[in-house]
Amino acid sequence: MTDSSGGTALVEAAPEPVQPPKSVKAQKDPTFDRSTRRLWPLFSMPGTVWLLLLFVVPFYGVFAVAFGQVDFLFNTPIPAWNPLHWQFTLFGEVLHASVDGPFSAVWRRTFGYVIASLVLCVAIGYPVAYYVARLAGRRRGLLLALILAPWWINYITRMLGWMSILDPTGPLNRFLLHVGVINHAINFLGGYPAVVVLGLVYGYLPFFIVPLYASLDRIDQRLLEASRDLGVGSVRTFLHVTLPLSRMGLITALVITALPMAGDYYTNQLLSGAPKTTMIGNTIYYYLGGGSQKNVGACLVIQLSLLLLVFMAYYLVLTQRAAKEASR
Amino acid sequence: MTSLTAVDAANAAQAFQTRPSRLRPWRNPWRKPWFLSSITWIYIVWSLLPVAIAVQFSFNAGRSRSVWQGFSFRWYWQDPYSSLLTDPSLRLAMRNTLVLGIGTVLVSVPIGVLLALGLTRWRSKASAASNGISLVPLVTPEIVLGSALYLVFSTMYSPFIALGMGAMLLGHVTFSISYILVIVRSRLLSIGGEFEMAARDLGATSIQALRTILLPLLMPAIVAGAAITFAGSIDDFVVSQFLYGNAENITVPIKLYSAVRAAPTPALNALATMLLVGSTLALLAAYAVLRGRRRGGGGGEQALSALASIE
Image 1 (cartoon, rainbow over the protein chains, first blue to last red):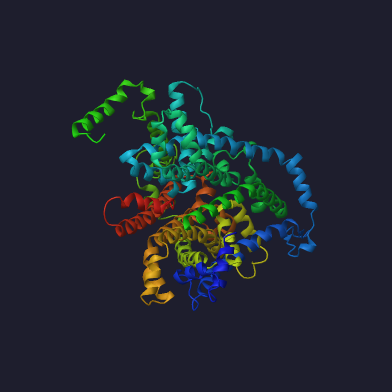
Image 2: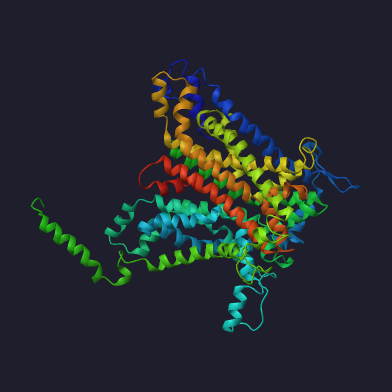
């Protein structure tokens, strides 16, 4: 947001060349054209209006419903669009239930699953991204294509395969029975937290690897060689050179995977479906999708958004900074 | 130093090559990274095997989705009641998904490209705000976007557009605009202003420079953005599920999700396979366009990077 200052100064200074360096820049700048200066705001208009109407207003609508009233005859929400009419009693009740009530277990479980999944993502994803970015040699193109492939495959299709594998009559059970590890088939799809974490890791790992790959790929090979030439071993080179240089990529990857994971409700519905693995996404969908208390759902959406806001803001600041560096 | 001959250089090179063998294997930086390479290959097999199994069972001759009973096209067209071709609900889901995917591309690509052009050039406080708004959808969890849209479409916007195909189209375009913006803008920044400047020096107007110089240069990013948008739309589940309204507007991912725990037959796997075919075709078309534009070697990897928008 801070880059606007330079830009406005440029436009204002141009007609009267008071500040020589800026006016020279303005003359050379292809985007500076008095006749078409209004073109760029005009270009931005459809997208901006679209996002205002279909992103900003709906998001405000969540607040309006959460802090609004309920038609007690039909049990439908009556959104309060005027902030002066907002009532916070329901939100307070839901917040209380989240902190110290029926929802608290769901929140704890959600974050437990997300953290466990992220740890596994780092453990599996970092070596893979590192290998493909730095050591794959001439196989790199192939490996990159294979690593990108899951991006293009529908999430539910990918879960469908696991549902076949984990089925009581599926290959995994048949294998375990054959080997003799178990003596009766296990219904892995019957509510195992480990299966849900496996599903989350499987589902989101591709989205974790790619940004990490991109940042590892950008590291200058000469820095690693310099470290080696100075007599530092592989492990210390990794810890003191590679890891710090890939920090931004790692954070991006963690944020990009943590955000959808925290709002996920379909993975555990498909792979478990049991109340004991319910995540906050399931609770939100329960209240908004089928349930009659849509304003409870709206309150939970606000709570989830507020919790994730820190990560979202951090990520946006990072990308803005990167974009600014690229345009420099 | 100056008397270094070719022989010396060869000796040095030889010494350099023989040195690693004298090191202990774990200190040798030139050894084969077998550990990392095996993790990578195991990961790749693990990430793609379930998909292969899901596709395999679409060709199952029996009703089971976990026991293989022989190869057939029963669930594609042979079964009289519940194959892709004969079950009207599956046909409807495929048609809706395709319509939605194409519609989303047609609406969101022009809006996103214009937004990228505008926001890159237009510098003011308003543009900074607009820029901020247009990036937030990228990091908003789908459940938040889906429930927010659901709440307005079922209350304030319901007199204009009810839940259904229209609402889904609006929702899909909303999350697609930001993708196209990011992809096109990164390309715009890497192109820089020189070409346009040259065109302007030669007497072109802003619009002419834009149309004849900038747009062709942006084409790879636009193609990649369109392919990603199409694949993103046909694969979308969360926003669609919040906005589809009734069974008439069901899409393939919704059908997969709702039927898989209720009445699963391999026809669902066939449906999932069609989804896979759809996004693969979009990918291949975009890849062919991108690769064809950069004649010569090495284009493939760059095209891949462009498609993954990691450049």
